Image 1 (cartoon, rainbow, N blue to C red):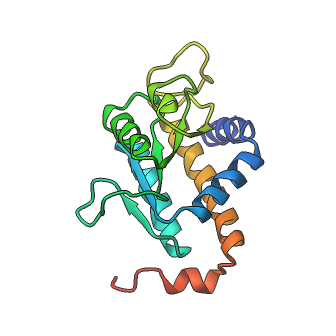
Image 2: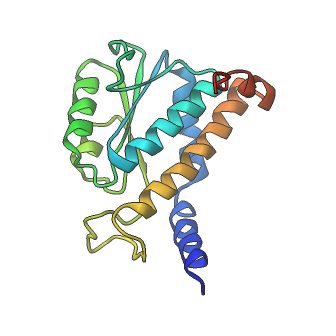
Image 3: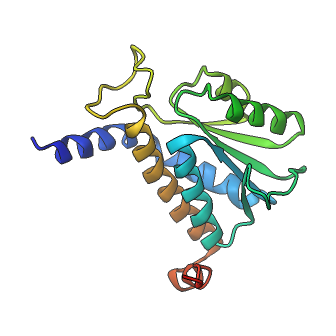
Length: 182
């Protein structure tokens, strides 16, 4: 089996363990949120930002935590917090702060017992390997958290498809929001 085939098989193994109903539930929560805030660090942060970008294309009021134009979070808002290990301090702290303000937090992590999962109101468990290579994690040929990040990207795109369907947003509407300054 080629390296590419092995990677694809690993990603398939992870995403096939996530129930589509969970993804639909996340899409419904996003639809009902007044505004959506997204946080992640490192490569997981890039996946989070790509999710925010696509949600913007689909008409959501969405912000990336830490950007200069991000407003304060308020009642009715929702935070999506992404951390493979569930222990990234800035992500956990933001989730705890968000929850203390009475807002919903969706944790996206490999570890359902992590500090991030504990600080959340909803959990999207992604059973992939992380950089820590814990005993119960799926084996992977890839370094660090690559399998988690790849799987999260596909799961986020699946959530976006559900979100678009719920909001009746078609390709042309999404394209009309795509950057035109490049």
